[in-house]
Length: 532
Ligand code: HEM
Image (cartoon, rainbow, N blue to C red; front, side):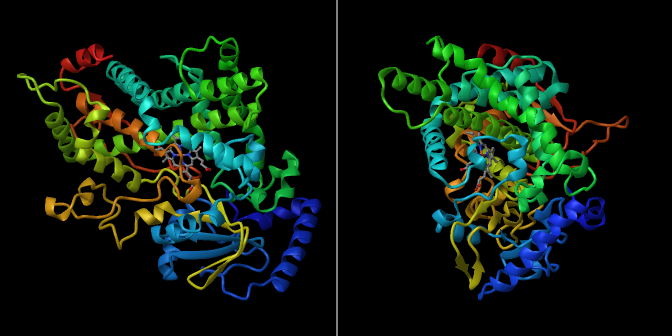
C-alpha cells in the first residue's frame, strides 16, 4: 500500500473529493479547537490536514521510525494521520513503562477496518478491549501457560520427527515441509486435525492467508483504517487510487480468510457432537464443555462463535508465525557454519555418542535446560528478525502523559520491536547474528540482555509464546542433531549466499532461499524411523 500519491488520484471522483473535503473541514476544526495543551511526542513535521499521511513510508516504516528516533533523540515519537494520533515506542523501557505498567490503558486495539473487510472475524488479535476480549484472552491464556504447554509436547515431538524424516527424503521441499510441520502442530492442538503428508489443503490455506494478510500492509495503517467511511467505495473507484487499492485486495481475499476460519471447525464439529472425537484439542475441551452445559441446562460463558474464533486464533496466529521463526533460524544456521557446529557439539555432549560417533538418541524436551547455546540461538533468532517488526498496534483507552508528552485517548500505539532489536545501547553490532552475545562475560560472552519485544507487550502479549518457542526448540534441535545445513554451491564450488529480504506488513517473513539439508550419515534416518 502506498499512501504517498493520494492527491494526484483524487480528481477521478467528485464524490471522493467531497468526502475528503468534509473530512478536511472536520479535522481542521478538531485541530483548532481541540489542540492539546501539552506537546505530543516529537517527530517530523506533518502537512496541513493530512498530517503525516504522506510522510510515513508504506514500505517497512519500522526502519524509518528507528531513524527518526535517533534524529529526534527520543524513544517515543508522535504522528497524526488525518487527525488520528499515532505513537511509536522505539525502546523496551518505553514499551514496558506504558504497555506493561499502565497495561489497562494500553490494552485496546485500534479498529482494523481493512482487516474487517478481509473477513477477520472474532479473532482475539483484532478484538477491541471489551468483555469478549477478556473472555477470549482467558480461554487462550489458560490453555498455553508454560505448564499447560507440556501437554502438547508429544504432538510437537511426533510432528517434528515426521517432518525431518520427510525433509531427509525430499530435501528440496524443506521449506514447505517445515510449513506443514508448523501448521500440523497448531491444527492438532486447536482442532484435533491431522494434516496430510502430501498437498494438505490446510497448509495451502495457511499459505494463501499469509499472502493475503501480508499484502494488507501494516495493520491499522491504511487510508480505510484512518477514514472508515471509505470502506463503502466501490471497487471500480478503489482501483483508481493506489491508497485505496488495498480495499479491493481485502474484498478479493475475504473468501480465503473465511475458509481458514470455517474449514477446520466444520471438519471437526460433527465428530465432537457425535461424541466420537478422540484427539484431545482446544476445540474438544471448550466445545465439549459447551455441549455438556447445554445438555444439562447450565449456562455457557462462551457462544459457539466465541469458541470457533478462539480455536481459529490458534491455527491462524500460531502456524505461519512459528514457521517463519524456524525459517529465520535455518537461514542463520546455514549462513554461519561455526554457530551450527557449536550447537551440534552441545547437542552431542548433552545426548552422548556411541562408539561410531553417532548420537545415541534424538533430542527431547527434557534436554532443553542443558542446551544453553541452542537457547541463545533461539533468542538471537527472535532479536535478529522480530517476526512482527511493529507488533500488532495497541490503542489507548484514556489520555496519558509520558516524559512530559501528551498521548491522547484513542491513540494507535506501535511497539517498534525492530528498533528495540537494533538498540545500540544494549546490542553491539546489532545486524550480526551472534548467539554468544547473551553468554555471561565470565563465560567469554558479552553479557548482553536477552531480547524483548518479539512477542509484544502488556495485556496483549502473545499468549502462544511458550508453545511457539517449544515448537521451534524441538524442531531446530532435531534438525541440527540429524542434518548438516549449507548454502548451495556454484559450478566452481563457491557458496551461493542468498540475498536476504523480508516481506512488508504484519509479519516480516524472509523471501524463499535455497538451502542444502543433508544427513551426515545413514544412521540418522534409522534413528528417526526407530524413534517415531
Ligand atoms: C514464534 C511465533 C510467534 C510470534 C513471534 C508471535 C508474535 C506475536 C505478537 C508480536 C503478537 C502481538 C502482541 C501485542 O499486541 O503486544 C501476538 C499476538 C497473538 N499471538 Fe502470537 N506469536 C507467535 C506464535 C503464536 C502461537 C503459536 C499462537 C497460538 C496459540 C499465538 C497466538 C496469538 C494470539 C491469539 C495473539 C493475540 C493476542 C491479543 O490480541 O490479546 N501466537 N503474537
